[in-house]
Length: 268
Image 1: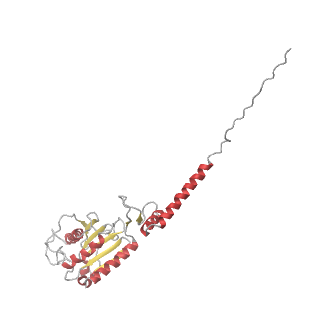
Image 2 (image 1 turned 90 degrees about the vertical axis):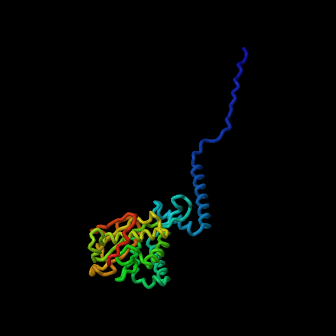
Image 3 (image 1 turned 30 degrees about the vertical axis):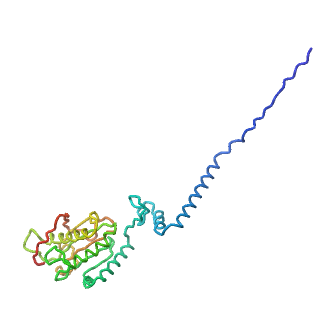
């Protein structure tokens, strides 16, 4: 009987890769790319101008975008947008005072020009004397000195993004017996005349947000309602939108840009 043939067993071993190593390498690679990107940003900043450095620092200090320095304008032009803050108000105040002193015609009026920094912003007040310095007596027509001063102010204010509020005030003396035109109308017309000249000299049409006339409701010298300095024009460079302090209880007359009554010449 023939011997049984033993089956031939062939063992094949597969030459493949080892087991799955997981995704840890991806995390390491992402960290490496991030580190390289950070390095390039630092190198770029080191060679950038001071304006760019301040803009980037302003963003990281205030990511919500309310910082005084932002990286670009709304149109994305890459220009630095600067909103006048407390420090800038002080610089503007000092600059205006220096420019007023530099002009011989205005230097003699420096005691009638008050520039103060308030919680609302920078307040510039033009105070009248008994002879009428900035406006012709009993009228909303600006004098030569008043026009020169407002032209100087416009040259500085038009460069700011801050909005402006213009107020007119009178003393307690009755304007005239004409009930159709009183201290209310005169104070509003004088404020509006100032607005027109400021915009004529470059202040943007949307920069003046309010023009108000208060008559004698917010006296500067309350102990003497007839003091000439109660007749004044106030220009407020506002820090932010809001109702100015001290206005509660007053009933201002807001006027439209259409003409003011400038031909009234009753003695005031």
